[in-house]
Length: 144
Image (cartoon, rainbow, N blue to C red; front, side, top):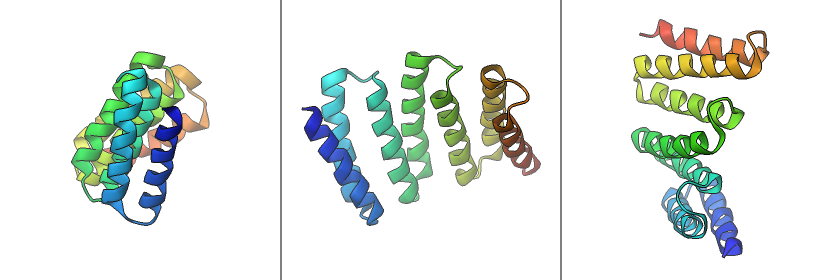
């Protein structure tokens, strides 16, 4: 039921905050299973759970696993919203940050360049968020 999913998500969040990453991962995984059963794998609420799981993997110092779950979320968001959407753009940037953590600066720079392109087409070239993304891209590009 949706209420059971919400309860699992709350448990996952509390466990994450307490640093009990395995328990958080278990709660989020259970919520993912239930939510996908209710709405299918391609629902934005399922993508949100993949994001939460990604955060747990990052906290567990498993950035490669974190990227996989964040990419799953991105795939769903793109199917649902298209590219010119702030949730999609934010998720793209999160993947870039994860590649920075991994130390793959070339991949991170490519991802940040994509985020800049998406932000420009969505928000316009003069939006301050575009400038922030340009700074991320530039500082990452310097590390290559």
